[in-house]
Length: 250
Image (tube, rainbow, N blue to C red):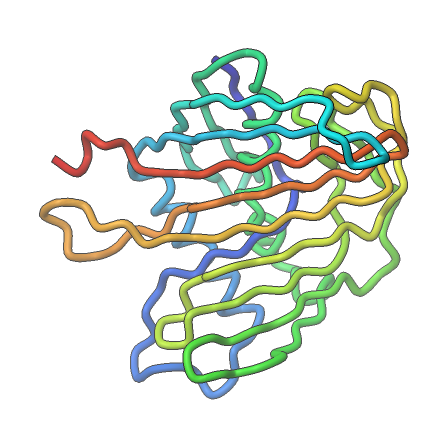
């Protein structure tokens, strides 16, 4: 078992699960995203989930040097906006724990957009409003501070960069996000590679709506989180697939 607390500046994903009365607002803003992020945290804390984790390390030639898998029980215990703290609990194999922690940390990205001064930190640009999806970009306004590395979680401790998100147009529910860190390189101790230089950090996430018996309202939770870490020794790809506890469906 491993617990994470005080995760306040980890990656940034965005989750939106609120339905908007009267359809899509005339102008989708960062404020809409921040409000919906609170709903995402509430939904994710409602029930336990299972995570199937896959870890693949390749050398500079692209040859696979290490491949591991593992299954975890995942509980998100909520986010306290006042303290800036969130807590999760993971139960699973020790050999894949770092990979599971890395993906779980990146799934809590909306923390980055819940601060009162978020609009001063990020520009928000709607890229496209198609028939089904709204695409937008969020960019950090100021120059990024130097990155730090959290070796126990295999993730950046100070996240800064650009984000692209896709929101379901009818209710602004998050479909997909992409993040690319801009505060690199950073010296890091990365699982399998050891001491190395991280030159790239890329994360993507998909979300899903889950219906539980007796509750007509869907819950928005992670579906698939993928983290790609590029170093001077090779590349590490972590993929985590989320599913609600099967006992909840009975």
